[in-house]
Image 1 (cartoon, rainbow, N blue to C red):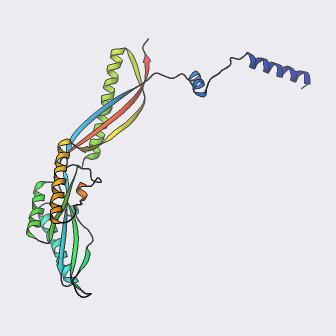
Image 2 (image 1 turned 180 degrees about the horizontal axis):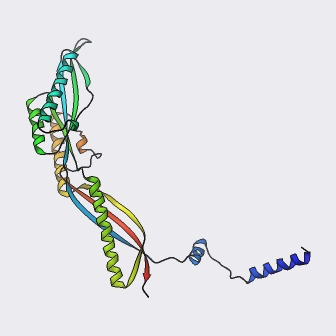
Image 3 (image 1 turned 90 degrees about the vertical axis):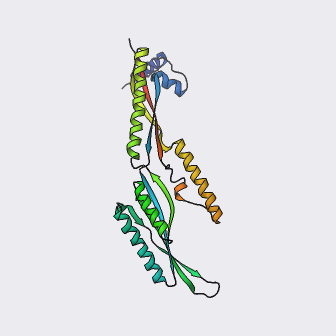
Amino acid sequence: MTKSLVGMLLGFALLTQASATELKGNPEELRRFLHPTQNIVSLMGEAKETAYSDKAIINLIITTEEDKLADALQKNSEMRKLIISTLTSKGVKLENINTSKFSTSPQFGWFGKSPNSYEIVNRMAIAIFDEKQLVEIAKLSDAHEALELADTFYEHTKKKEYLLKVKKKALHDALKQKAFYEKSLGIKLITKNFRDSKIGFGATRGAGDLRQRVIVTGSRIQKEKGFSFESDAISDTHPQSFDEVEYHATIYVDFVVVINQ
């Protein structure tokens, strides 16, 4: 390639660049120029559903004390067997009765290094599904001094089903609004994106008020006995209500607006 030909090509390139339309502006302005923003609207769909707890977990504390460790262990074991046999005969399934590992606690007197007695403490968590089974547990607790009804918390076993149910209802609510605007404004809305927001559940106001009343009453009783009141049933890690549970969902759906010609 000769020098004269190279010079001609360079000159042509410079001339073409100079004649092209000059684009000015910041990156966002240039992006809008090259990719015009579509008209986007966002519609919010909401839904609520109320259900009732259908499962209760009852915690029983079994405490036995004897002069000899073996006797205390044996007594505790026999008490647990009695509880299991009684409840299973009343319709509680064996797989719904769970026993924790026992703990020993030697009881020392004022003098001497040897313990005066041995205390065995065990906990049983019993899942029940009707009030009759609760009555049977209460009867056992009333009849045996070694048994103490520690606490109770409640669950709704169809939680996943109800969360899906409110999500579907919230989406349906957004789509109903879409149809309304399309018909009223003579436009077409094309789905572009959606976002879940505030999908969850909690106690209804009535159930929450009852729960708070039980907590306050329980705290007062325990303070009168001279020790602090702490229970998994009122912990923030167990948000279940005593009876009513409200499921809620909020979903945002983004649409591209197309003006009908």
